[in-house]
Image (cartoon, rainbow, N blue to C red):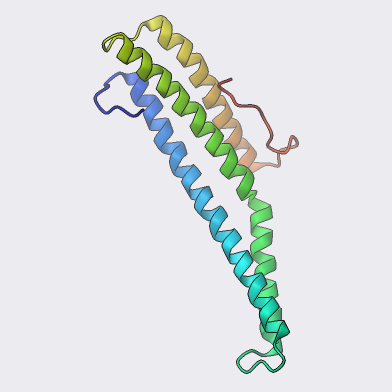
Length: 155
């Protein structure tokens, strides 16, 4: 529920966070699907080439090179934990969007007025989500002993 006519600073900040996290989520989603499709294509190509009785255009080294490329792509995927980060950013995006939805609902129900008490409650959820985002940045720099499986910050 994105409303461009709401000029409240708290709403604008939530929307900015959504835009930022959405960009990161989309990057990891694209990277995830690129890696998976590339892995599938390379594995299939290796299988087909190795099964040919008399490969006209492919030397024996081709299979070795494709296997090395496939190994490198799989290693990059493992190193950067693309799938985990994709899911984590999607979860964080969900949390920010739910905060925004609560704000917009209150805004619409009260004819454009959102009480400071209501904002304070949402701000606590926003702080928890931001703390979770900071934890993400820190975990990008060091291994996560919990395996990246934390509960949603806004719950």
